[in-house]
Image (cartoon, rainbow, N blue to C red):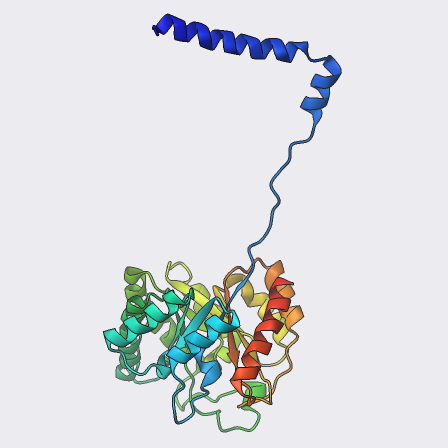
Length: 320
């Protein structure tokens, strides 16, 4: 078939379509053109839920195997598992690869590695040790395929023994120092760690984890001083607020990359707290939060019963 035949056939096809259109009555054409366009429905993706391995352990003498937490999480219906660094049996590559493979085979993400470190230390060499510890943990997160690390500010260590510590969060600075010194140490220490985190593509999410971070003014100052780093993040723990938690959560959730949600079935291991999760979930949705919510069940009830109940509470609260 030559080129002229193809062109003629295309022209005839277009002409027939035009004729059909002109044959329609004006009222029909008007109805067709005035029909409102069907726009796609706007919908927010559902919040996804992880469970912290800590929910099954609480620093008992015998570590609860992370492998078993992964199996439990898959069976119960979680989307991921948050790994507590201190709960890991080792830092050897074969062990970490095993955890990564178990999670992958179970269809689970590993969204966060929670570590312990402190920058509230007057001794520069002591702070450097925690910086090096964090750098090592960044490499562990990379090996595990984990995109985020939970970070602490640290504390003076002078208030934990006070009977009202979990109500006030107050600590007296060490003699000769002030909270302003500690804030500067946190900014400097985190800043050093962020250099490595940026290179490795790992987020360092600072948490309201008692100590200096009990004061959310301090926590916000530290976060805002470093927020321009693409590796800087914020983790909000629903159970670690001093005073009324809701306005504090409302103020900080705009920055949050991940939320740790505590429950206390059977009474709290360290303290009891009644949390209005429908209210917390509503605040999070209204502020546009879309990250993971990671369960930290910190009650005395057996985790085999308390963790599934906790998941149902969180699902209803955050996703309706």
